[in-house]
Length: 177
Ligand code: ZN
Figure 1 (cartoon, rainbow, N blue to C red):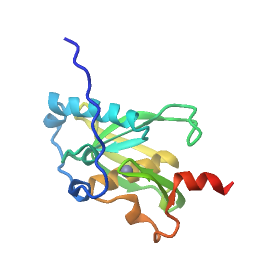
Figure 2: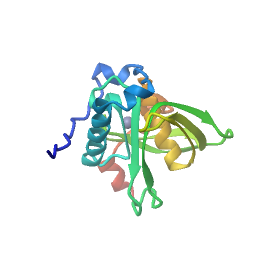
Figure 3: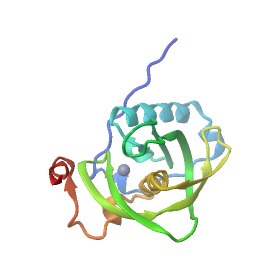
Figure 4: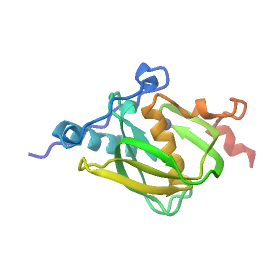
């Protein structure tokens, strides 16, 4: 029987789970049908909200998992980002270079703010098959990895901003040109 995948409602800032350090998973749990279904629901939810990444607590789950992905050809990052699922992510910096760019968040709708992030990093954790995952990311994908891993530790991008004076509504940003 074909079972449709449910789109979840994104948790907005103020929901306590967004400020929680999320529970890490064992490989067997990653492979369970419940968690595999959750991942599919996170993927369709991310697509529905037009996001580049989504974390477990953003769909109300206390599980240390995030998804990221972006189709090729999108202006923000034309190379795209391969759809990636990572459980229990750990970031190791590669070099010390940082860069500032604008970020937004499904849990903080309509706003954008500049955040300084590591330019290059190695991400390790468990993949969708419960096996060890390790990959180096640079530039925009590295930024997404840092933003999503922060979520799993109860941190949102506003906390990473150098003050809130640059925080802007997207609709107003377009008028600067
Ligand atoms: Zn976010």
